[in-house]
Structure formats: structure tokens, C-alpha cells
Image (cartoon, rainbow, N blue to C red; front, side, top):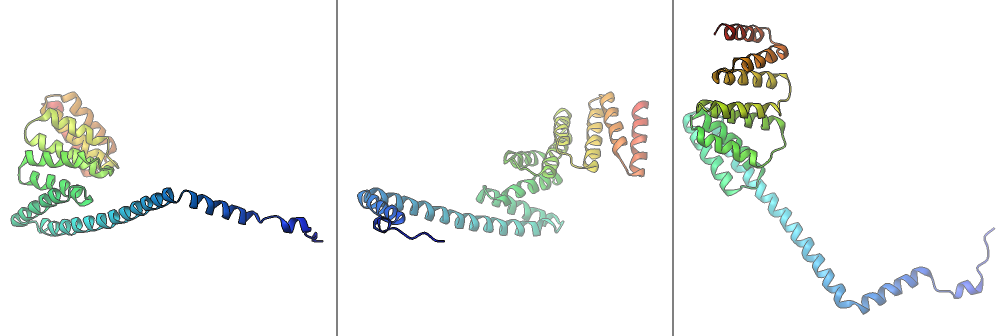
Amino acid sequence: MIEKIRKEELKKPDSFQVAAWRLIGYLTKNKRQVIAAAALLTVFITGTLAWFIYDGIYEKKAGELYFKAYEEDIKGTILGQEHAVKGYADLVSGYPRSRAALLSLFRLGSLYYSQNKYDEAIDSYRGFLAKKPNDKVFLYLAHAGLGYCFEAKSDLAKAAASFEEAQKYATGDNYTVLGYRNLARVYEGLNDKARSKEHLLRALELSKDHGLKLLIQKMISELGQS
């Protein structure tokens, strides 16, 4: 059975009303501070919204430039590569904070390497790595790309260091085997046959391709004879 409300309780102020009046009193008493805080909040929200809009436009424009350069890149022609290099370079210069600039630096490394411009390729790969990408495949390929550049410049010590670094990011047996073969080749060039053989044996152990196994076995045999 519901209890009857006593007259004394009817005379008491409602708790919500009390809280509301207290809030109104506080706002009236501290009107200037409240208006200032509201203004700051409005500026913050407006600024944040403007930034997101700007950032979206910034990334969209960078993406458009990237795909325009990429279309030239995949043509596979000398002229196409030249246009792609310019496109990627302009993108990196004009939109350095964009995600497209990160990919452009990676592509520039590959293109410069294919053009035998090893110093430019090294600068591009290092620029890519300086942006601290978190994709293991790209990290592997960028460090390996540095290794190929240094190997082409006959700086085998730096090539070995780059290939060793690449192995830290190898995902799957294919990349790992490729890395071991790269290291074996470079250490052979450094006349360190023991380490070269060590990496070839690791590659042989992981390789699942019969033809590749035969090739690695032949390399090990020739290494022992030299």
C-alpha cells in the first residue's frame, strides 16, 4: 500500500528545484567566467572541426596527386617513370605530412634505384623510414632497398647492415629466405665465407620450393670449392 504524503513533505522544496536554483545562482554570480569558458569551448570546437575539414582536404588532394603519379609509374616506360618521379617529388614537397607522401618516398626509392641513381634512392628510403611507418612489409622492403643500393655502390658493409635490419621485419618464409640469400651474397663479397654459408643453410632450411633448394645447394657447394 502506498504511504500517504504528509503535509510537512509537501511544504519541503523539491530536490531538483533546489539543484536548479543553485545552478542558476552560480551562473548569475559567475556570469563573466561562464561566458568566457563558453567562448573558449566554442573556439576549441570550431578550431577542431576546421582542422578536420582542412586535414581531409589536404589528404584528398595529396591522394589525387599520388594516383596521378602512380598512373605514370605503372606505364613501365622511361617517360612514364620520369613523370612519376616528378609527380612523387612534387607531392612530397607540397604535402609532406600526408600519408601519400610516405608512399611517394617509397616509390621514389624504387624508381631511383631502377635508374641507377643510388644516392637519390638512399635519400628517399631514408626519408621514408624517418617517418616511422608501422607496416612490417614496407619496413622490410625499405631496408632491403637500402641494402641493394649500398651493394650497387660496392659498400658491402653498409649493405650487410641494411639487409640484417631488413630481416627484423621479415614476414613469412619467402621474405626471410630472400633476406638470407641477400646476406649470403654480401658476406661472400666481403670474403666472409663462414657467414655466407650460415645464411645459405638457413635459407635452405626454410625454403619450400624444390627448384630454389637445388639452387641454394649448388651455391653452398660452389662456396666450399672457392
